[in-house]
Length: 161
Image 1 (tube, rainbow, N blue to C red):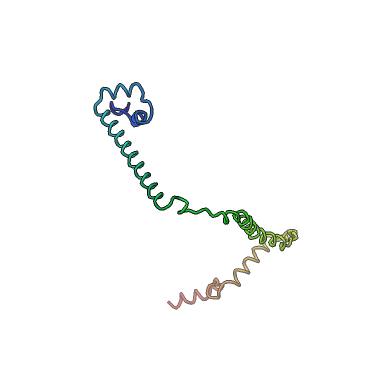
Image 2 (cartoon, rainbow, N blue to C red):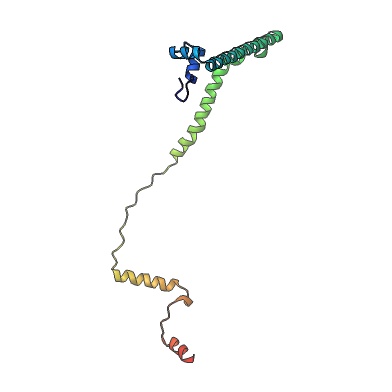
């Protein structure tokens, strides 16, 4: 039974159509006209589907017999089946060569690189390091951007104003 209403669920209809329905479903079908009508509509629909499928299949078989059967549509090619395994073996060998040859050549051309020992930088004092950094900054800055070193030019400009 469907928990949302008092009618049969889809599982109950499935059991009633294709196998043995449960006792509660059989009792409900005896008392409910709506579920009985739905079940008969489903049975009619499946019977019509079976009829139309069988009719279509028999019509196709008649057409096939009329033109000479399946063998005229798909003739057997015994000669081609003989060469199938050698072709497969050749294709496998070609694939192996295509993949394996470049890998083998690449592995042969690799030259081992000797590891160079890492050398520690010489110890520099903090003052020497700061002096080096300051000199690098002074030389890499353009002249107009260098800091002013003389204070006389600023005091003369102030007096003129």
